[in-house]
Length: 197
Image (cartoon, rainbow, N blue to C red; front, side, top):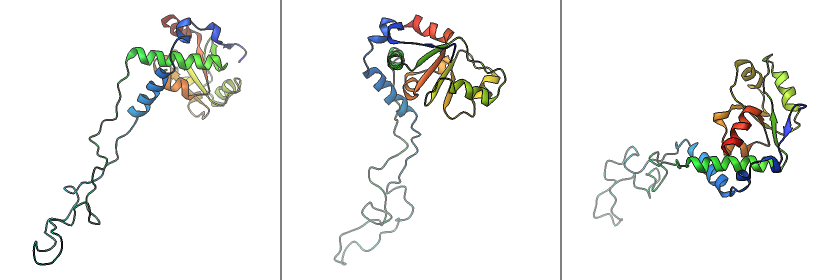
């Protein structure tokens, strides 16, 4: 961490500080919704096998008329209003709102002293122990590491680390920025972010 710069609130552009927190909430909500697999499914009375035969005569038995033993009130019958794979959980997020969510997440990390900028993130040896030493230098619970372009050696070094997640700049979003305890960003990426902000 010797060459790392801790970004504070006063180091941020004014635009970062004017973002309403609700933008981050809406983005994270949409992000989580878009991850849903939508595999929950139940069978209605037409999809349950069996029940083609009328269980007993319409009249003469003293019982209520029944057309199928697969009706919802029968054991083993269909499910009424159950989940189906027809439902679409995706939520649209505008580009501007996505940007605002990231800005607020970064501003929140800066306010808590959890945002670090380094000249470069490169583990030339490709060894996990070297990547671990890099991560441990920040003494954080977990770390989101943002690199401009991930090279093969650095990818291999970070691949098996549980306490950190290495991403490229185009993968950075408000959800990931909010989810991790601290963020380490390469200076080239940080300059782009603040310039756009």
